[in-house]
Length: 179
Image 1 (spheres, rainbow, N blue to C red):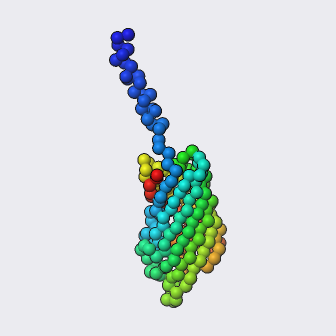
Image 2 (cartoon, one colour):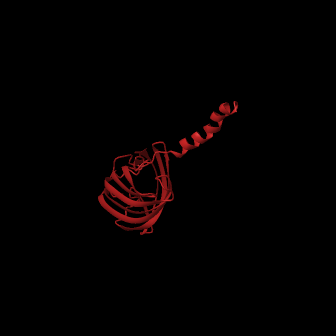
Image 3 (cartoon, one colour):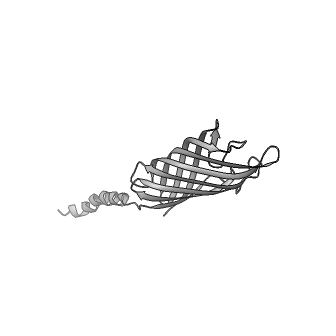
């Protein structure tokens, strides 16, 4: 009995460590930026809000032309994306499926040096994975959809790429904070 009081703390330590691991803060919001968007010629900011366990609403706004002009066409305009995530977990972390609507409108210099207006829309389905490590958010996704509107010579619409006049593709990595 005397030795039991010395063993008791060692028996309780695993249980207390398990309890600490189970208690994770549950965040309802994230604020993210698209990691490579500055390199491709735009600045994007995304807000995400949990609506129900395993579901969230996401909205992205962007300024086209705020970033590196890789193609030397001097784009100027804006973009908008919105989607609803179905996350295969009860939090904002995990594998998700996201139907999404995206719109971009911008002016750019063509090969003839004329200023051309492009306006393109798409409805897509994205698959991705989002990690929340403490407050750091990492989000990677790929998507495919159907698009319509005015194509560009480069097929790049600062948020998605169009192929064959109707097929749209998207991929990205976002980094941000959870709160």
